[in-house]
Image 1 (cartoon, rainbow, N blue to C red):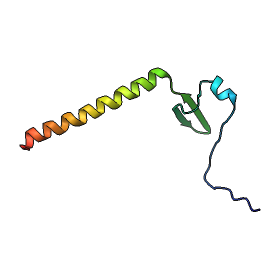
Image 2 (cartoon, rainbow, N blue to C red):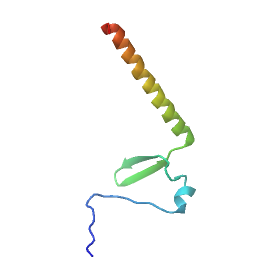
Image 3 (cartoon, rainbow, N blue to C red):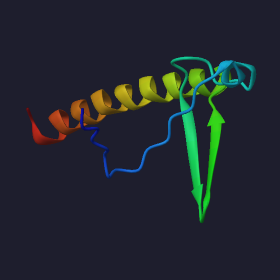
Image 4 (cartoon, helix red, strand yellow):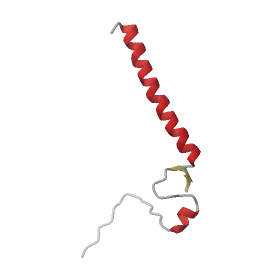
Length: 75
């Protein structure tokens, strides 16, 4: 059987040590890239909550802007 390999670089990490290091399955991760170096940062509950809050604020602002445009344009 012939094995085919992708030419796209990839990195696969697995092991119980990931959970011990704060990287739970399904958790978000921030990746910082520097020359020859990758830094993986597990997202904390606080950051996750702030992202959700930011999403809600952006959604509200979108509705507010649409309302203002309707008033300004006479729609």
